[in-house]
Length: 170
Image 1 (tube, rainbow, N blue to C red):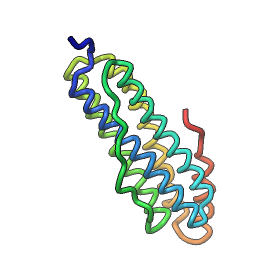
Image 2 (cartoon, rainbow, N blue to C red; image 1 turned 90 degrees about the horizontal axis):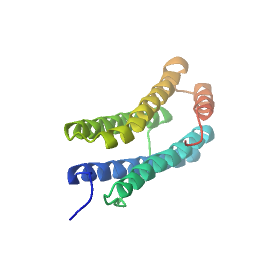
Image 3 (cartoon, rainbow, N blue to C red; image 1 turned 120 degrees about the horizontal axis):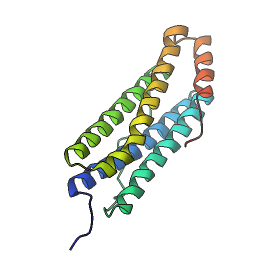
């Protein structure tokens, strides 16, 4: 007899979210490397911290799965972009990825509502709030390009501004 309240489908979806968070961590690590190689040291710092934060998100879900009687699965991560056309293009990719994570969290929460899994919904609420903040930060970065442009000294100023948004993971 199996003693657990977590459905197999919810377990599967949570493991998919683990993989998505792990991939986000790897993507942001690749972004940090690109920034360093292209003399955007402050942006590199921001994306290194973003990578750490996404890994922390992955571990939060990973631990939750095991705590509630599921099986957390360590994901295989492949196909990580290493090159970008420009800092602006990289930041657009950052926003697009965060939007996809938000959509995934929303779908996961919707599934949990259908299953009346209020414990997991309560757990996921933190992630929903976090995604609002992540998208806001990404949009703010893109606003820098709208205000300052994306050439010459503007790139130096934008790099500084992105670095100022860097905070340690929670």
